[in-house]
Amino acid sequence: MMDDRTALAWLIAMGADEAVLDDPVDRFRAPPPAAAAASAPAPARRDSAPAAIAPPQASRPAELSAREIALRCTTLDELRAAVMAFDGCTLKATATNTVFADGTPAGRVMFIGEAPGADEDRLGKPFVGVSGQLLDRMLAHIGLERARNFYITNTVFWRPPGNRLPTASETAICLPFVERHIELVDPLVLCFLGAAAAKALTGRSEGITRLRGRWMEWRSERLGRAIPAIATFHPAYLLRQPIAKREAWRDLVALKVKLIELGAASATG
Image 1 (cartoon, rainbow, N blue to C red):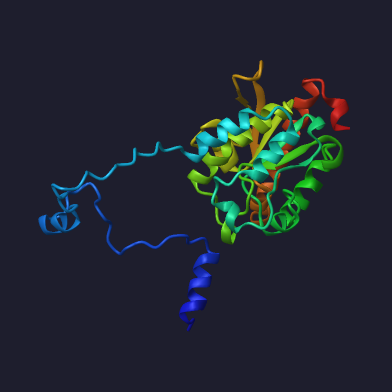
Image 2: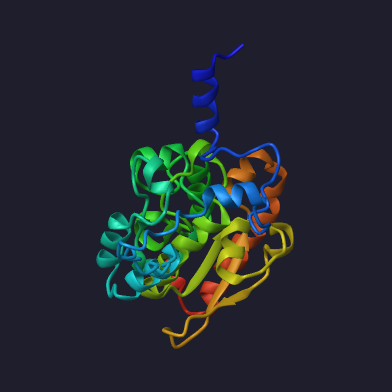
């Protein structure tokens, strides 16, 4: 039986970040008369001047601020510094390190995953744990090496508590940085690792089993061309479901063929 302190620590580790009531609260319903009277401000005295009312502060969503910041970045170094300084995503408060990217942006292939895990958070680099090691071995079989000819990042830059999935809000806040990341790298081909990345960057709603192996296009008004994109299983999924490696291998072969078609054979060995 856990004591209260241990139970609270467990909830925080699993990603709980707010307390809720047993029953939903309808905040659009008018309060009962007694409550309304109790909360109503006292009438101003006739011999006193009315209190000054501060103008309401305009709301500024974090994703809007992130977009403005991201668009001002003209180099990857500037974008990295902007992400490191950004405090608009609550994930940053519980993470150890900002996980920006790894590999070489000159490699012409850009992989985008979901979120950093514990190893990535500790080392500050994406895909360095067991799943990342599996990915490196698989990519080596089609001539791709992280240090030489591919680049890799995630849809969020900080580890969600307890390795939970990033929320839609957290992904939306980071998305302008991710989109600007793609624009600055300007890869020949994109590869989305898992459904979360594919859905966030293409707007598709299908699951990964339907999305994988199909060529799509990623577009930006700031780039003069569409970037071919393909989705495949996240390597963490392949560790849980080794039988899916066969389909993942087909996706990687299709990626290799596309690179050859686009004249990037020299970039993949």
